[in-house]
Image 1 (cartoon, rainbow, N blue to C red):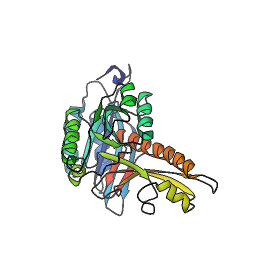
Image 2: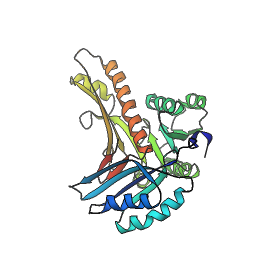
Image 3: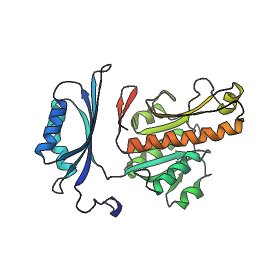
Image 4: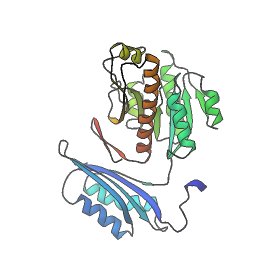
Length: 293
């Protein structure tokens, strides 16, 4: 554990438990009882029962004394998880999630995430930046982060994705963020990193597709500019939504001003999605998400 991640003197170690399972009586009691008998203290708890899917979701932030370890907590909780058929995880709350950023030729989201990470506004460690162009190599280098130029052509796409997967494995990366990475990922890659890739795009779809969507929107007199951050699936731009942001605009706004506003809302929506995911606040619920923000 790095010095920046060390627990504060005198403060018990902090952990986060997340779970989802078929909804039934006794789940909360079982979780709280396990934490009680193991000497843990619940500091924050959020839960949601979805009547549509019949699933129950829970996020618990708890503390434990120094004698505990994440390995022992996981081993002990396994029996509870099995008895309720849970999909569950326990992580240290001070553990920064390792991520990879991917970008093409629009750098506003990349620049925003790099800065937020540097000032501690995002609980992440950026292991690398991957791009199919070299435009932002100098920017990334100024942050002391490795930059990987991985060109993508039709005949090299499979090799490029294999290189990405190897980098994810080698760097122990939990999340890949498409910070305006303008390449369609293959179905195989989407499946390999299911629930571990976040994308950002404007919210005009499906109305304004293709080139210059903000100019198309201006020509139609739109009054709301929006952005959507979502998990990537094989269905293009249709993965489970994590966060959306909107900004109202008037009739006097120019196309270039719409583009600038769009950049801002994209940055805001993506940053919140990455923050919530890295804090383990987002749980998949079929084609939707449960976000304990």
